[in-house]
Figure 1 (tube, rainbow, N blue to C red):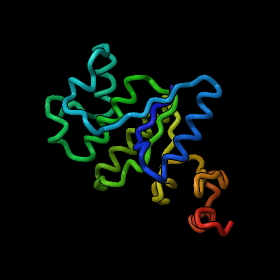
Figure 2 (cartoon, one colour):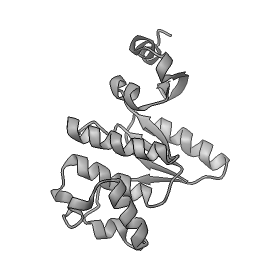
Figure 3 (tube, helix red, strand yellow):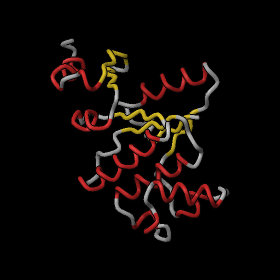
Figure 4 (cartoon, rainbow, N blue to C red):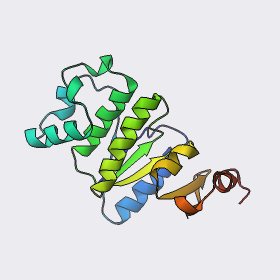
Length: 173
């Protein structure tokens, strides 16, 4: 299973999600795109799910302190975690995250990266889409650059420099 915490209407990520969707369908995997928009209450998010699974996901995403609050009253960081919780309820093997830190504070980014580290430790693959290269260096094992919807290259994060990655992004490499 693959869950995408992304906006399929975003012009930048749409080609990437379309390529992943095509590849997934080729090998018989279904991708679920999880959207935050329109979600009003946690009850709606977790409707029909087993209680123990819900508790485990709430613990992992550190949502315990806000489970009785309307999503509309939560900070962007908590809303991001609710979206992640929605995806994790389906026990995906791969979680796709599209610019997840764009509207987060530094402390919310630290929380998100902690959760990502937990997911990696349990074997969940993370596809993390971002233009923030410092974040990629902090949490990734490999960096794949796409330009104009086309694959450019994949490099090991430990072996790549920021200048090399920028060069791939702008077409100098």
